Amino acid sequence: MGLHIVVLAAGKGKRMRSALPKVLQPLGDRPLLKHVVEAAQTLDPEQIHVVYGHGAEQVQSALGYLEVNWVYQHQQLGTGHAVSQAIDDVPNDASVLVLYGDVPLVRAATLSHLVDAAATDALALLTVVLDDPAGYGRIRRDDENRVVGIVEDKDASGDERYIREVNTGLICAQARHLRDWLSRLTNENTQGEYYLTDCIAMAAGDGVQIVAGQAGSVEETQGINDKRDLATAERLLQRRQAEALMDQGLTLRDPERFDLRGSLRVGRDCLVDVNAVIEGEVVLGEGVHIGPHCVLRNCTIGDHTQVLSHTVIEHAGVGARCQIGPFARLRPDTELADRAKIGNFVETKKLKLGAGSKINHLSYVGDAVVGANVNIGAGVITCNYDGANKHVTTIGDDAFIGSDCQLVAPVTVERGATIGAGTTLTKTAPPDTLTLSRSKQFSIDGWKRPRKNNPGHS
Image (cartoon, rainbow, N blue to C red; front, side, top):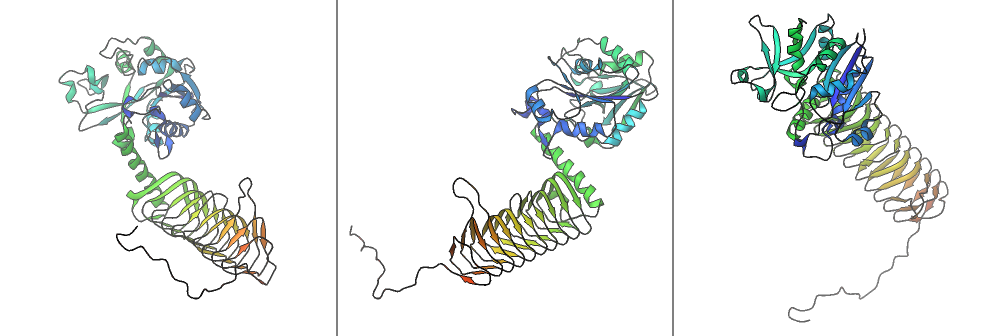
């Protein structure tokens, strides 16, 4: 008997006050809906069905690559109607788990327990006890404490509003039961909608066992309805991710000031200081230290490398025992060999920097291949763009580039060459020589600085 998962993702999300459909709002830099689908995939279902509607083109454009069965809901007539749009694609002998595209923090373990609870031909639903249940459907129980139904908040009587056990919306049941219950739903309620929750009373009436399970935490079941909810969920997600990384041995100076918006793999004895932002796929070797206020995006950092404060590294590879920053920027296709150094206010792009080479401060080096043990002084620029095309600068091993030089590509500095400070290099610098290009220095006797006119005179 297989498992089919139906994810309801057709809502508009008016309270988001956004042109972006609610299920595409970003949480940890991923759409809400993607979080839900990823959790569903851990259960290894036969099929995941996503019922979508509002912003259909945007949803498909953003997440059309997901391996799910997309089910378009032309009219949003309630949760029961939404599930009924997908039920025809589910065989009778399957279990059906219903999830919501705006409930992104539910854990796979919680979903697994829910599925297991429904395996004995029961209807399993996930409930939670809240201090303030306003806005949620209340769980109705009989004198023997058995669940007999759910009453929506807007339809609840005065006494029912005091019930603190509420419905999360997540249920699991056999498809043959669910198909029957859905066919019997009516919209005779204050909202004029077909409520999935009405299936609970039908199950009780049909003698189907109802199992109410509790989520591991209230946070797992919180829906996202507005930007405040989204911000709350972001911090919950970041704390969860931080704790998982600390369990792997990562030292975080302050877990509350850490943002992971992708994946992070760490070796032993790594440290990340406050307000670091990790995006895309990032890998840290052993003993890596990341300073405060850094941004790492799709990069690999080698063992025992130090990244100092306010440094940005994106789509780059860094070797072992390097030092980068502070206030450095490594742009895409930068590759640093072991023991390389990038200092403060240095920008690189499409650079291969050899072992032990240094660019210490205030320089731009792009579209360049630099050998080992090269020293590049302050204020050096590779002039790699001629207005139409990019050109490469090549610097051999053991070269020395003095301060305030312009290397006009395409140009080569051969092994062991020295380029004097202030040089504009347009031709090959031969090996083991000093190359200069400077205007002759001279002084003018008797020269005086201009003076301001006397006050009151034009």
